[in-house]
Length: 305
Image (cartoon, rainbow, N blue to C red; front, side, top):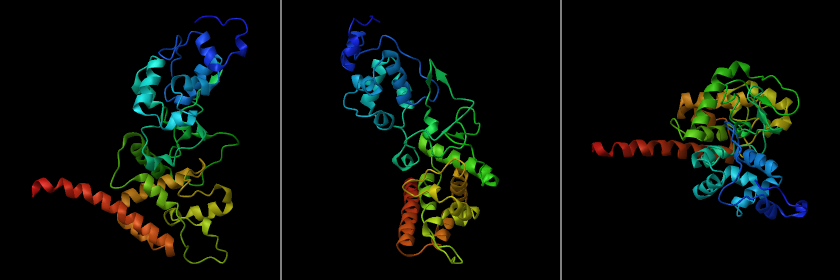
């Protein structure tokens, strides 16, 4: 790599790239990605090495991409190939560093910032912390690399009030991960089940001081949840923002596993705990999910007719 000329500190990021001999075709020095490293983390490390901003590093290759978050979430195949060419790396490796493979139904469970970490697998390379994909995944309670428990970022770790559901939670984690990462579903989408379980319900018997947001459909399956949410109102999840804090996450994962095992009958039973428009929306969603599972089964029988 050529040394910077005198006065190069005043150069624009694009000028600095050319001053160091970087072309859009290939970088003279490439840093090896770490296992499970997020694409933006890898780009940030290169930006640090070349002494430019991370966004300038990204836009030198993809000028149309306006943020690192977009690069993590929504790269096209062509953009993946362009990054792979510039960084002299296999396109499949670049693709695995992004969330591009994750279907839309699971993307509500991808956080906007790192939520958790694995103390055994966290790494720092040349003074830069490595950010892993798994730190953003709202369905994980264990590390995908070592299978150890994840810990929250910032503040003290809190023990889960749902530890007795741990085995079921691990099953739920696996089913959600299979759907998001490998496109594998059972009879219905696990992420859609998670969304339905976070809808509001009407408790029975009706409490004296009723706060609708404190009661989720999930509480029918995991009765401990109601009391926990009353104590922690700031932690309340919603169908649009279903990522629970790490110490509460096992409840939702276990609920998903229980419904997956019980089948559609349990969903129809849960509808009886709702009222009004919420009940109608819940019922319509169930009907659509069940109908989607029947269609492939019916089409697979056509060759027998």
